[in-house]
Amino acid sequence: MRGVWTTADVRSAEQRLLAVTPEGALMRRAAYGVSVRAAALLTRYAGRVAGTRVVLVAGAGNNGGDALWAGYFLRRRGVAVTAVLLRPDSTHPEGLAALRRAGGRTGSAESVDVAGADLVIDGVVGISARGPLRPDAEAVFARVSAPVLAVDLPSGVDPDTGAVTGPAVRATATVTFGALKPVHVLNPQDCGDTTLVDIGLGGELGEPELRQLDAADVAAAWPLPGPADDKYTQGVTGVAAGSATYPGAAVLAAAAAVRATAGMVRYAGPAADVVRSHWPEVVATGSITDAGRVQAWVVGPGIGTGRQGRDQLAYALAQGVPVCADADAITLIAAHPDVLDARDPATPLLLTPHDGEFARLTGSAPGPDRVGAVRRAARRLGAVVLLKGHRTLVAEPGGRVVVNRPRGAWLATAGSGDVLSGVIGALLASGLEPWLAAAVGADVHARAGELAARGAPTSASGVLAAIPDAIRQARALAA
Image (cartoon, rainbow, N blue to C red):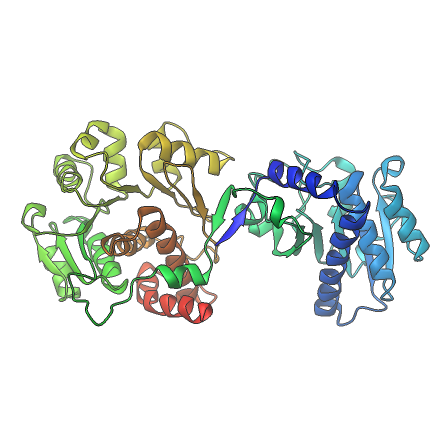
């Protein structure tokens, strides 16, 4: 599991490390990492390193210093390097001297031919900055057509929320130092491919702000049957979903629990005949009170927001097993908070809202600080909250937040959320902790979307069919 630290935590760790490190050593180490990544990009896009042309866009302070020192290392590899000095009077002196010593050139934003570069390195601002690009930097990047390598983060993107509130750099790739920061996992589309350079911060960092699962985490957590297992020990998932109007929600949620290797799936609701006709292995009944014992409930997709849906939700909450409340169940909780009185506070509850449902549930939209919003919601509701979006966030009441790795926007399709709730329900029934079930389920769901799409839009049914392949992929990558 990869940790992600706030910029305040990283700056504090850097100060402690700087106190015991020779002056300038950390900057040169970081800059060398930038130059290595720059050389790789030049090879990829220009076919060579020596003889290419790189433009550095250098602001004041250490971020500009990192870029200038990277230019020094690139000059030693035969690259023509020119630095645009946005703040000539505040340019990092040692970095500037090193670049000039190596034969690098400097110029103003107006005088340098940015459009003719093979690569542009963004060294405008670092992790201490906030707000959009200033007009002079904006004008420079408006003329850029080459790949852009960002130093620490794309300038103009908020380092702790990933929010963009005005002109900002969209990088092809980013090189960051010491630790991943929130921007790298919350706004990967503007960071591009992020490379982490080790500068020795590991011993100075405390608990991370965010966590991100990797394939090994998913493979280790995914329940697999052993020699002594049977359908009951693998987990019995209950699904209360669908209606006469929306039978597809029932089919998708129940089928996803089957595909996610639940030992048994019990369906309860008006779409029993439809579910049974598509998935004969599902034990289907018309009433939730007749469903029999389960080890977790999925409630909400397509049940409606009337009295019948409310009764289904209240019944599931009262059974003393983990509940994944999705879609209409979230709307019901927002409109009738007293429905939660049926739940023993010790019984795990997992809520899976999209932005609109989150606003109904909490009274306000997530806003630019999505991490803060989902963390507050989890604490107030006493539940694990999975906030859907391009970067799905999972927060537990104790404050831990996991962010999933986006794999394109293929999951933005009708019925995709029903599939996710069924996957999570199967994991809950297997005994995984709710936060882990949500995080692992979101990861496999995203992998399935990527595999189903194969570069073109897909459907929820396609995502559903790809779940076993997604599980296999995670296990193969972890091996």
